[in-house]
Length: 321
Image 1: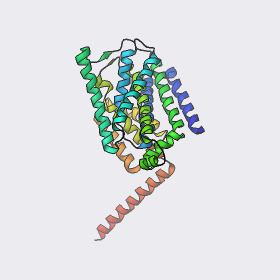
Image 2: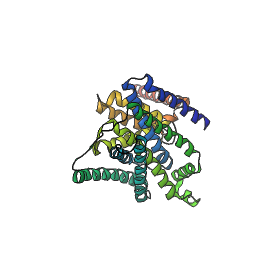
Image 3: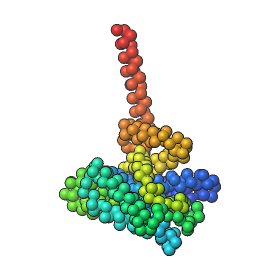
């Protein structure tokens, strides 16, 4: 545990210095890394432990963004971000009460369906009630303020993950992921634990959405409720290692670099790269990038040598025949 705190302190110190020596492009890239590090780490906090595949991250992100857009003129900056977290957590409590009794594909499909329902509901409300779609943000904080806020959320998400992983609450989450019926038999209130974990994940996603909304200056449901935000968060967590602490952070850096280098110029190649990384991790790194060790490379080398030996042996037998 002490090592994790030292690593977090070192990474936070390095990220804190970026705005002082980095260009606008570097700061924007670091901000993207921090955003997905916070989203993927908080997602893994619940889903990685319980093995519930939630696709509702985009819903909580969008709720936080809209909460910030509606209240930023009346509330201070941190107040708007905090309110975004609270509103997202309340929505998660309601959503969790409706769908957390399901598992597997049913849970994933329903969380995605509820995300789309919320997006269309807000679009309908804007068209019918306010007469317009989207919000123009007239009060926008400075670049460094947004960066420090997202950095604080990412550090807080990792700090909470470190504490929860070694708490009774974390053990209960892991027990649900291993065998929910057995955990319930042992006295764990699985419904309460799952709902609390789901709301905690939603609070971080809502806070990140509230903080990141000002990057666009104009937001609409299509932008902030974009399913790609949720899907990429899940991919980052899975490829980095959803059951690990630092895997999602490592994958967030890799994905952000890929996004900047490929997505704008070659979007098809970017999506193909994401799919290829996911396939390779499922086949050869089920524990994610965080599970890579020296023994992993040795095993890969032995597998390649064995495959090459079998291939040459097959060719020789064919030539002899």
